[in-house]
Length: 263
Length: 367
Image 1 (cartoon, each protein chain N blue to C red):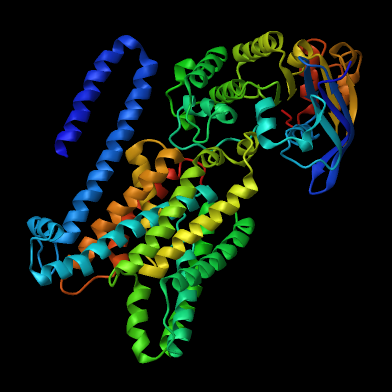
Image 2 (image 1 turned 45 degrees about the vertical axis):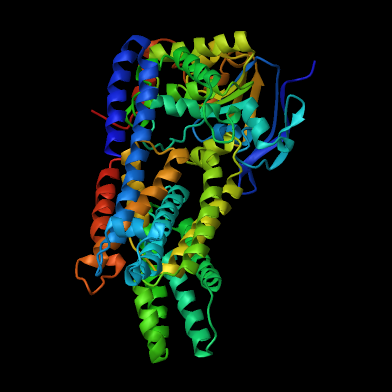
């Protein structure tokens, strides 16, 4: 069976210099892929390249059997939504205004929202629970709220695939879990394909169909959560040599040994 | 007119009462819509009132009945109809067109650079246009060749693009909005210095002409000028208005604009060319005018309560017209019969606005 999203020998990087080589990803419709790896490993670089923000150094990306480079901006925007870590700059825009910019690919020449557009905006806001803050100025809400507004914006874009760069970094526990449930709901109801990067390994383990582990410069491993989380692999990925994942005492001991602070 | 505004207010209150039953979503949208309508009515009334004042007030007073009389052809006072048709009316129309263009150019540059204190004057674009126009004027006048309005605009456009090119090169190197503006001001100084040099070496007869114009002034407008500038500015205004949707995406930052399918390269090129055409047109006819381009978009934004290009573009144009009509009226009347340079007046009212913007923007993303 053909993959919905596929990369072939993809190399990504900046200014023609490859940072990560030979990335092979294959995703069926409705699967969730999570990128994990240490800071600076190149997770964002991969996501940006997939979203066409960065030029590929080498290789091809296929979306629904069509080459990404051959798709027009409008075509792609109706299929793919993104949430990146860059803060957006807004001026006198309420959260609702920000969410409604997600309808851009569907509005007419002057970008005036129709009734259907308003409905889609409202639905998306209800889904991620930002309806209460919809009239607040986007610059005056917390980072976590902003992250949820941006997610609502991506959802009302009605994409088939969504690219998320650290979507949970500012969320508290409750919203982290809610975020996972929203993703699963969209996955089941609408067959949404998701590619995202996460720092929370526990979340990655629960939500992902596939996990891609990136170490500095190469893809260390790709597989199902069960394959990735077996044995000592995670520790090697993050350069942790000790058994800090087994109980609080060992974790504290590990932190103690890391610390340069001596009493 | 006043009655109109009153009606709007009454309607508004009726609406909000009615809406309490209908839920809060509708109220917010309608509230905004009414704010927009009232803002546009306000700007429209402003243009009409100042249009009338600018025509009536001057060394020779013209009453409204005189205007009506001349229009219907009953009034036979030769002097008054001459002043009205040959001096006041073309000048006032020019102020409306160029004031709007100036404000719109400022708005486009602010959007382009993501910089709230950008404008054609501070970025040195007006000065660049001025320099090339001065060079061309001196060169052609020395050979007794007559210059048409179109030539002036073309020369100013070349100058504007030249400065814009430098600013663009610098904008890649310097980070932060204040540094960009400082670079623009420096470019402006260089261009002004060259202009001064040229003017100093020009023939006596030309100097008077050049000197007046290089200070910025709306005087000496003819119907021919008005015709040419109206065509250029209105066409540009329409093109800008058609770009309002991609502009709204561009406002969110390039990352998201690209994801929304905006061709960023194309849009940026359009913005550079359109803002240069507008700046060039202003400089060609009225010389460099300071602060209107930076200040009015902010005032209009506050009035509308939104930064949506779809509304901002026409509102900015009207706002610039009102602001310039007001300033030109003062420039002509304060020290009559001597006329102040228009930039003197615009700076008095515009510069505080810029300071206010800088002070309030500090909290947000300003480096």
